[in-house]
Length: 206
Ligand SMILES: [Zn+2]
Image: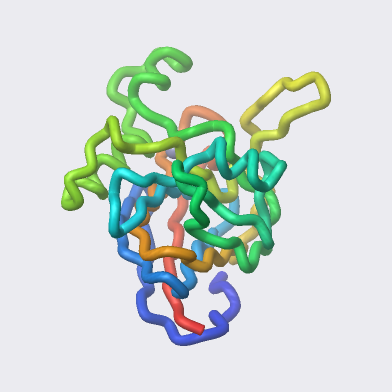
């Protein structure tokens, strides 16, 4: 169940329980590994420039500058100011989502008719409170291990993840960042295959 050892010195290692969240500072050059410990569990990620928290991770720049909505090894994650924030240096899964954004109480009320359903946006707000970051400052997330196929007609759906136990992504920081990771609490659609599971976050130096 454990992923293979990291190629470097571990400087941080934690496991997020189901529905868990964390904010953490990653220095330029450090590598962040997100491990899907049991498989088929989504982790939503947002990031900020540590030196200027107004500069956020930005999905549309990431799509445009990579020319794809399916990022994997070799792709770069960009900020709102089109600066490189992370490079994906390893990816054993190969399917992640850039289009869904994060689950939250409001959209789950609209799409599923439930009240106060706790989601990734609520997780981000809780995790980022020590940085003075509010909901309005939370950008669209990159959703690791989330499987949202787009067919030739443009139809978009949420499907069961294809990730296996121990799959991971490694992200090398290209600037000093504050990141927040939400272990997705969504249990009303197939995105976590009907069961909420732990995720591991490791930071290492090469
Ligand atoms: Zn979620």
